[in-house]
Length: 287
Length: 276
Ligand SMILES: Nc1ncnc2c1ncn2[C@@H]1O[C@H](COP(=O)(O)OP(=O)(O)OP(=O)(O)O)[C@@H](O)[C@H]1O
Ligand SMILES: Nc1ncnc2c1ncn2[C@@H]1O[C@H](COP(=O)(O)OP(=O)(O)OP(=O)(O)O)[C@@H](O)[C@H]1O
Ligand SMILES: [Mg+2]
Ligand SMILES: [Mg+2]
Image (cartoon, rainbow over all chains, first blue to last red; front, top):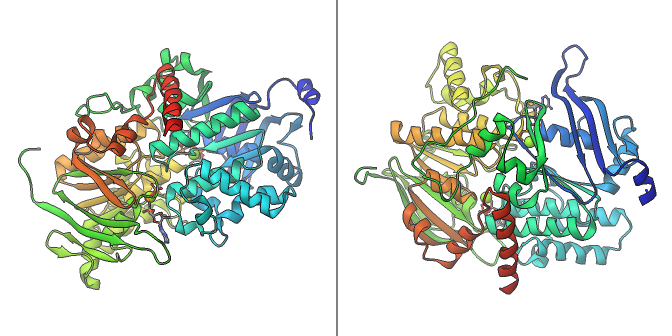
């Protein structure tokens, strides 16, 4: 456990990524680099959005922070508080990750164990930390209810396949936040949710960020969500950060041509549906 | 569109009840889709959209109701009739991860239908067609020999779309096909869908949570809640003059890509939630 004093000593960032490169491949020779030296930082309690092109390295970066890919080779630095994560043993990494970072995977189905009841999976992070079963169950049901799952108590013992896409996504969110992590990495957490439930989930995350000082790294394609939720934005393309800044200035005056292109491609409720949507030309050779 | 074309898909009184559940997941759902028409299906998470799509595609047998494609009854189709129905009706699933066989290469995944239905028996011609399809969804030819695992979420979704379009279906059923795409690729896919509709008369059932996307693409919109369609009508009617309060609630919850406006909207949205 780190004290606030420890943290002050290592600067005020909770997560600090410097010059991160990620390559995939078994041998050094056939390795393909997909993230080419990015910088990114998050302060405690801060809400950061990472947006950008599909395939630009957002999920790869998130997985690198957690050391999830065995076939990825990393260079550069990833600091979480006082720990340098890139040089930690897998085992130490797992302990730190479990205690301090909550993760919502982009793929809610694969993240759940199909033969375990959803409630049991939600309770796990608490059980591991020694919370009693009865209390863990109650907190799990409360949380699932706050995430807008109807009859949360009655559905708590269902299996994942009995849940719809959006219900499974909320189970994954519950697992990630139930043990109150300092940092939540949320990779497309609301894609399967209707807009009302989405608003409810974002409000919950917003509350957790404000009340408990949980920092959030939100990866999303939805520029409407980013506008309402994030304080700062990082825009990625081809494994690089093309622009970062506070949310208002990026939307009001995007500097990178790519960011302007992205903002121009969003369909809006008040735009003319018969006009062809603008796109940004792909940049296949760049990576 | 000029005039009203022939009905392609007719769903009548569809009911799906899962064993051991209190309420039907799909409860008396009926609608039609005409040739060249796109119906958007929106609604609450868990209201039965995917179940409806799976029943239409013949992937699960509903408890009741009928589904017709042209003159053919989908639910009582023989095995051989089912094969041709499968070609005419393709589905892009909500989950691009588990719907692609991880052991197959992109070339095989996208080319499989061409082979199965004898559309491009010759290897070279098949490959050319696959490259063309990949290009349509914004993926380079260098993807051909790679396997799904090495692609990002949005790239996998595009592989699934190319795979579905390969056999030139008459009806494309899309369950959240663009929610994992960046807005530029999303725009590209939406423009592509519109083009296929006007050029080939492709019909679509389009399930999505993004109401701005649905408004952009769909001629007709159906709003579902708790297994039932609560409102169905033309795009202009549903967006311009929504009749059901649930439709109005949904429209009010759509995020606006403008930070000061959206922060304010979220703040007031919270108040309205508390007051209910
Ligand atoms: N296991 C892997 N092996 C090889 N290449 C990979 C692997 N995982 C991802 N990649 C490649 O790395 C690049 C970045 O992928 P990543 O999943 O981070 O994209 P993303 O920004 O999250 O995109 P999306 O918005 O579509 O989810 C992509 O070009 C992808 O093909
Ligand atoms: N195999 C199953 N067994 C029992 N119940 C199921 C099964 N599949 C779905 N359900 C239930 O049926 C209802 C409708 O699910 P469906 O997947 O059709 O919803 P959806 O509208 O697609 O939701 P989402 O937008 O979240 O994907 C849900 O309450 C779900 O829990
Ligand atoms: Mg991703
Ligand atoms: Mg669904």
